[in-house]
Length: 319
Image (tube, one colour):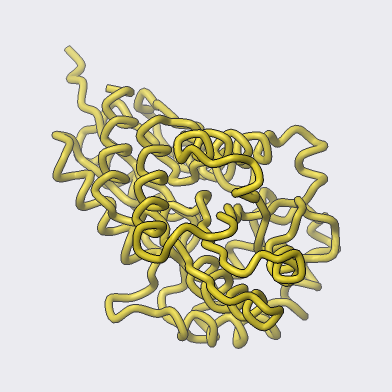
């Protein structure tokens, strides 16, 4: 009789191995070659990517990574490994960590679980809100890996958890801690990663899932609509992305009388370059230079106990 053995695959985006131009170039090459991320025809995109973007962008991005690098490594990797270890301590099944880009890769993580005899694979992409550019890329990666397997496990794929009560509760607790420490701000800004508007027209429900999270958290905190704002960060390229843009919004808030803000990025399960450098450094400067007086960044949930509790609930629901 076939023995049933569940296992968990945690997946996040990935990160360079080190904050150097060559390492960043390798990472960006893989990331920006994914048609889920950039769907420009290859004949047009390849010369731009290899001839312009990688040579020019890699050294600049490496400097940014250097500014947030932790003693143990890249923040995203450090927190992701802590999440894996904490989850593994709470569930009686194998847990592996795989990244869509860079190391440790999806292939090695899947191979490890299969070698341990896993017959029921629970896949948890650590993206709270579905997007074709993130969660669907994980799906593609798994399909490509299993194309080389003769026997397949039963797969339970967690699409997202934008409104999961334990996720909202964890976010609520993090905001309340910040309010208690720094005082209630004039405005709580929820900055989500952006995607091209075209993706939405073509069927991606990502902005709705972001609105679902924002609405649930606003209700849980007992705030009214005038006390919160949802924005989108990290746009890339020239086509229109989801608005309002975080950087432009923060530049304009002081002129509207908003002098104290607290900002969080609920779409990121672990702090990374986009939160620690883009939000807590670049956007802090934009806001304060424009006349803002007080700015606090509310960290990602990282390996907070409430975050691990949520993961345990998501995984156990698939057992």
